[in-house]
Length: 208
Image 1 (cartoon, one colour):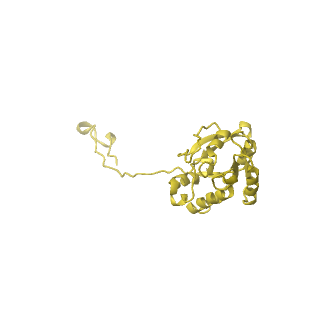
Image 2 (cartoon, rainbow, N blue to C red; image 1 turned 60 degrees about the vertical axis):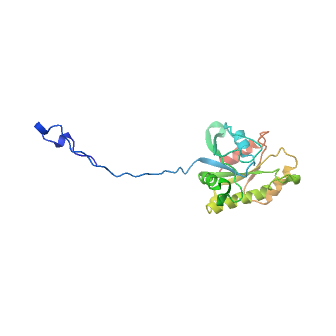
């Protein structure tokens, strides 16, 4: 609290003196950012999220054939409408079953997801195909939506589409058909490595 300044003092001998102020109140305020991106890429580890972000933006997240390549959200600006507008898309680190119970740093990753206005659920169409290891895409989608709602009820109800990746792998079209039969969300299939389906994806993303 401030003291009285020179104008409050008389002229003459006391001119220029002051009353000292006293200590004021101090508070510590923590601000938490509640918006990180327009759209979040949500998927299990190794679903192809980082490769997809590379294909639709100028971002260059790390890409590798092992889990948890991404440990922090990677942001990319995506041009829409011929470059007249753009959106920010976040590559969110991969979720695992039990993320809502904080398995695999799940709470940290889910907090990032909560800050996105809409979602692209990214599932690997080749997972579990022909004896290949992995969780079938429709099962992966069920896990993702369940983990979001267990963390924050209704979170999975935000605007969303599903992107099935890795269509360059043989026989994934059958997995895509099965996925469409098992979800009420729009499904777009892409090969990010070959840039197939990217234009259709951007049109769908613009409508979110």
